[in-house]
Amino acid sequence: MNTLKTTLATLLLSTAVATAAAQGQERPLLLKSQVDSLNYAFGYTNGIGMRSYMLKSDSADAEAKMKAFSKGFEETFKSLSPEERIYTEGIQFGAIMSRETEKGYLLNDSLMPFNRKLFEKTLFNCINAKKLSMTQDIAKSYIQEHTRGTAEHSKAKIDSMNTAFAIANGSVIRQYVLRGDTSRKDCKTFRDGYRRGIELYKSHDTIYIEAMRIGAGSYAQLSSSKGIMDNPDLPFDLEIFRSSTLDGLSLSDSALMTAESAELYFISTMQAIEKEKSDRLAAEGEAFLKENAAKDGIITTSSGLQYKVERMGNGALPKATDRVKVHYEGRLIDGTLFDSSYQRGEPLTFALNQVIKGWTEGVQLMPVGSKFTFYVPYTLGYGERGAGNAIPPYATLIFTIELLDIEQ
Image 1 (spheres, rainbow, N blue to C red):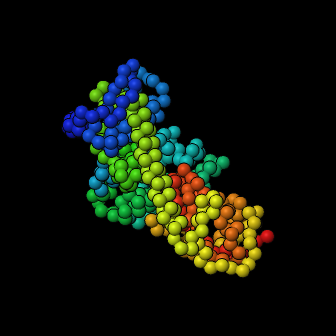
Image 2 (cartoon, rainbow, N blue to C red; image 1 turned 90 degrees about the horizontal axis):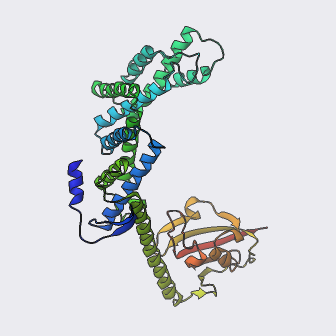
Image 3 (cartoon, rainbow, N blue to C red; image 1 turned 90 degrees about the vertical axis):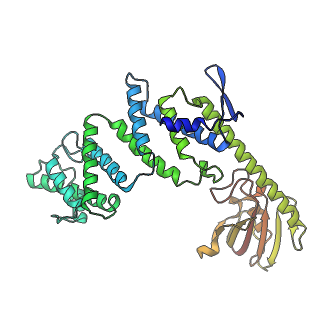
């Protein structure tokens, strides 16, 4: 941990990239690059958020709780080896089982006592792929049929339920945790983790267990992400993120930001990045439309919509209040295909006054049987917000549309 902080300290340069009011004074953040600063700000606010969530309100043992949480998070916020992953899964399962059976019965049924000895013997026989008294499917069916009985259960039924519960869980563990590998070493690793999870639960170290789960999940999510806010130009630096998260969890005096400055820097910088991107896309769209307007066959309407007749039909013209059936495909100006009824093999039917303005205006120019290509400025498309991940803000769009029918 000290080494990591030393590494972070070496990133400091003389140019301030963010400032914010904190404790009555301006406190600058000095990092090597904007991406490093965003990683730190994102991690620090993440740590502050987790701290608030775990503590809910101030308590006398807050420092001890956060030390336990920080330890569990740091331990698993990394690329776990297969053996470490199995051990961690074992810990979490042991803790979960301890919580679920804390009152001494299964499935919240006070008439169904938990037989730990039978459960664990069956569970580990299942994990080791030994011969069992019922299959996974039979075990699941048995649990569904006999859950929440209203009368006192017989010993045979209690034993069967404990057995079924162990087989149902053991089958999942063997398939998804051990990946079908029933080697003695992997089974022992899981069992050791399971025992450790029970010990941790008994000693009330549930915060540590929760932190392990969050740490492993966060690492997996961030390491597979395209970047901060899914921006590939802003890659995650997992070491900076981990360090700043721990700073936020502990409210470290050596933190490079405060909660206020981290939040302000992250929001304002991301907004500036998005604005620069949006301005660039808008300018590219305007330049494209200006050049396109000069091409042969391109007609520009008073709204700025451009179109080209690929095939003129001889059917009726639709009104804005009509429902129409069309085949179409949509592309960005770089040629990226983002939607196509042709690929789906099924035309689209919709009310013409319930789509983007460019479609409402353009399709009314098409007699049934026509095929037009439309060039839609962002003001007549999805505007400043875009649509999902496929259509960015300020995007000029190209649609090829065939009007198949008007449905009255």
